[in-house]
Structures are given as structure tokens and as C-alpha cells.
Image (cartoon, rainbow, N blue to C red; front, side, top):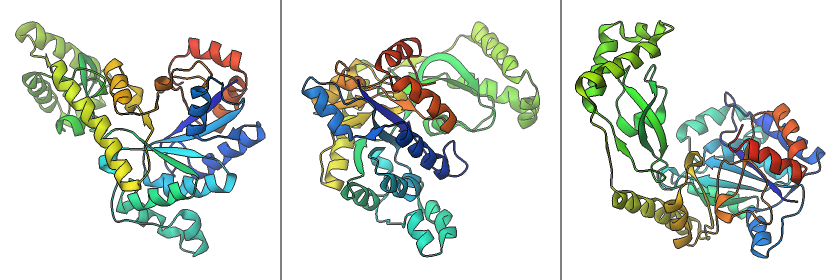
Length: 348
């Protein structure tokens, strides 16, 4: 027996899950016999040494996007489901109160929704207040800034098109061809500083070999990997890592201040934390405990059961309705769920 926690991000047109998809997901859950449960209720069962009721489900939204208020909120109310929205404290906007899509439809101005979204892609404190007061939503922390950093000198890709927003936020280096190394949430690793001369070399190489057109070659990434290795063999590479003290200072600030800000703005306790990109380590978990959080949510698959460690709550990220139907067959059975989670330790 146990509870299923589902993970969503955007609910919007042009995204993986449209409002119609989301509504269909809720219908599928109801038809499969899943009943809504609040996150604090799930925790309470574990606190009492009990397993949450079988076939119960809680819905979560990561990042705090405005479309969670505009589209998902009225749909959740309509179907009687509960949700937690995990917000990035420094990205929540202020002084903005929009109408939901359902309200716009009622006023025959549904075509105005895009203009409302353009005001901010993130939800506002005023909107969060309404969502909490409705009883449908709880609010949790998704950190103060949700920043990534390089965690090692293994190259993920060479910048082909400026589509890696986390990389641009990290370096503000938009040049094509620069190496994008493996990343983690900057609280779950010792952050690496890369070699700026190596960046310059690869950016100049791409510029001298066609710029944007260079990436029309099917083997463009392979060519740059060879140049990367050639440069290091000839010149070496200057990679360095921050100290443990620097990391711990940031961990404390991200976890402590996000909780403080959300509680001050909403006037309610923040008990739950959602790890950015699902990244966590011992330092993060210790700090969550020190700041009096009750649980942390991962991106590890499985059900929340009696023996689940509160700071490693599993979640299942929804892909589409067909995918959800198949997974519900697994998560309707605790034994099958345990077997599946051992084989697939991350969301698939």
C-alpha cells in the first residue's frame, strides 16, 4: 500500500502537457480508482508509522509557472484533486493578480490569456495566496534561485544554438561551440570553474569554420570533441573546484531563505522541499532537517510507503495520457511498484 506522487511542470499549449491533456490525466486517475490526498496527510501517515492508503495520489508542480494558476488550478478544482506547487522564491512575481482561464472564458475574453502570461511566466504571491486559501494547493520550496553549476569536466555538448537556458544563466556566454559540461543543482555538488581559454579556443574554431553553418554538419559535435582533446593534450586545462565551506554557505542560504520568504509572503508554514532537477546529497538533506522541513521530494520513481525515508519521497513525472494509463497499472500494485523502482531508479 502507498501513495503515488505525480510530477508536472508546465500545463500549457506548446508544452508536453496541454490543459486538455491535464484534464484527461485527472479523468484517467478517477477512472482507475485513485483518490486525492494532501502531501501533509501522506507525511502524517509515515509519522505515525503507517503506510498511506492504497491508490491515493498527490499532484505536484515544479518551478511555479503562471500556467499552473491560469490553467491547472481551475481544472484541479473542477475534479477535486489536491496539489503542491514548489516555487523558486526569488522568481515569484509581486503585485500581479490575473484571471484564470475559466474566468476569462466566462467573460468571453479567453483570447486574452496570452497577454496575461506575458506579464510574467511565473506565478505571483497574490495568486499563490488565492490557490492556498482555496484548499486545493499547498506551497513548498524549490530553492531560492534554482541555479545549476558544472559538476565535472565531462562535456555534455558543445553549444549549438543557445537553447541551454541553465548554461546561459550560469555563464552568460552565448558563443557557439563553447563546451557545456555536465551539470547539477549548485547545492548538490562542489561547483567547477571551467577553463576560459579553452572556451575561447573552441568558440573561435566554430567562428572560423562557418559559425552557425558549422552545426549543419552531422559530425559537428564529434569534430569539436576532437578539438577539445587536442587542445588539452597540447595546453592542458585549468579546471578548479570550490571549497566545501563555500558550498555549505550556499546550501544554507538557498534552503533557509526560500523557506523564510515563502512563509513571510503567505503566512503559512513551509514543510516540504523539492530538489531542483532531482539533485540532492547528504549536505542538502542535513540542512533541510536543520531548517525544520519535514520531507524532500526527489525524481526517483516509486510509491510513498510506510518505510519511505521522508527526505527521499519518490515521484513519477507524467509524460502523456497513454503513458500514464500504463504506469497506473504498475502503481496500483505495491509489489509491482517496488520491483519497477529497483529496475528504473530515475523517471522514465
